Length: 321
Ligand SMILES: NC(=O)c1ccc[n+]([C@@H]2O[C@H](COP(=O)([O-])OP(=O)(O)OC[C@H]3O[C@@H](n4cnc5c(N)ncnc54)[C@H](O)[C@@H]3O)[C@@H](O)[C@H]2O)c1
Image (cartoon, rainbow, N blue to C red; front, side, top):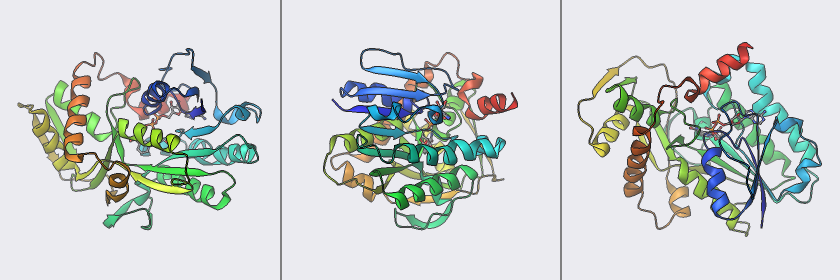
């Protein structure tokens, strides 16, 4: 049974990844500072350690076959509050960790969750060979750490550049487009779109989990030192809102389109990689079903406006202290 270490296990993606990998029978240890609470319970095959990943000793890291790194201050405005804190968390301490573990023979692979936001503003359809043009501090640091992994090559790695995530999670985030649109549509019957022409690539959180599952399961060198763009569809934000209204068949919702755009990112990502990985998947059906599943879960959220469901609120409070 492989032993997997998940850094950032209690975050939005970690809180769905841990149960997903648990069902596949991996032995899991999670490490998290629990800024958003603790969402996975310690049990037979799950051990959650509340700690800064940077504070753990080399000995601690001797236990694991795979490291999945989900730690990032992963929201543009949150990453700008205290730049030094972000640079330390998202980059400097990752380098320190890498140096701590680079000679360890037990680690078969380091799987790093990067973001398609490294593409910034690109007018052509993007693939992994396109030149990234990151805009925010968050995406610049994602790219810097990718480059670092690529240069060192002391540990095999796979980098997943995820599209903007959506889907239900026990650590729910309403600062990401699809989740927010669905929440506002359901609970205030009003969707506000700023700009709206900007193109974006979206990734269902369960597809991110399935991709990680595939990387762990396939033991050949297929994913070795590779960057993969992962997501399920591209659209601009105004069409996204219309698409969600159409799929969920919700009526009586006002769509307010504010032409003023504060978001400079715009990119469209090629689906070639993900289509090769998931050969038998009908993406059109998958998108409709995943949006409907998300809709049904959010409908039952008893506290859709709880402050800690917006990443920026938590980091603002934390960094004030
Ligand atoms: N959410 C998205 O739309 C999206 C899109 C593309 C890529 N990603 C990437 O996916 C990964 C996971 O994103 P997420 O949405 O789950 O983010 P998240 O903010 O919900 O989770 C990150 C977790 O890391 C923890 N953490 C922060 N600093 C830590 C430290 N020093 N030591 C230990 N734990 C620490 C936080 O407490 C949090 O639980 C990130 O790497 C992000 O860059 C996310």
